[in-house]
Image (cartoon, rainbow, N blue to C red; front, side, top):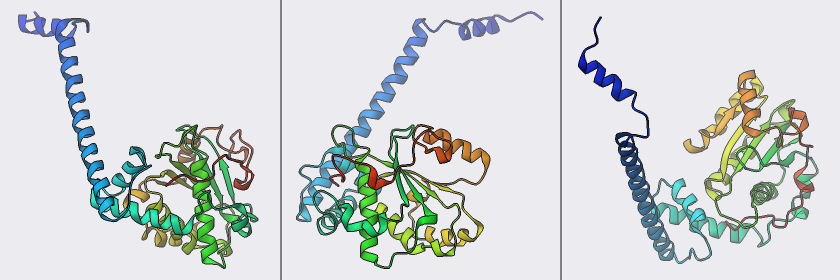
Length: 285
């Protein structure tokens, strides 16, 4: 069958090498559109940041000393609403001032919880984040709620601080792994889980990169469903319940063998959080 002139021209156009002017023109237009969109987004962010700073001042506080990455965490957590982000920021300032010493909570104040040997600190993961591993079979509901809250802060602060390179940026994140292997009814602590996640949501906005739940037994499912009632949608979207071999392979690939302890077929030695020495054990906010 003979090829029509139109088809010949179309075939010729489709086979044009990418170095020809028309291709370059289309590519330039695409890049220009991307740059304009990026500029618009940056301008929108700067406006929101300015409004956030103003709103914080109206609440008799200040953002002095806090860089853009820190402030952006609060804006993102509150859907870029400057007033809501400002309230969250000020609430967090007041909370840290009343709850956390300037240099972080020392080991001596949470020794009772540390002695169980249930928290390990590793990393960085493939994505560059510190990894906190919770061995749930070694956890038991705390008798003192205040001390447990201090322990949660200690763990979160030290984990985030371990991800600080030379200078704190303000948007460092963490990856959490809850290993539920071998847990019994004595280890169940819905209140403790809710407290931990609520602290993350209220006082550590956008600090959680991802959370993995390993080896979840059937009797824990109802407990987890109850806990999920207290979790924001954005938090739930970051949680992965590893239930089969394929998900386990993906989990290991995402974490990386260098960050995973040998017990999880990685290369790292299992290290308790209290055995990790850091120059700084708490972030600024």
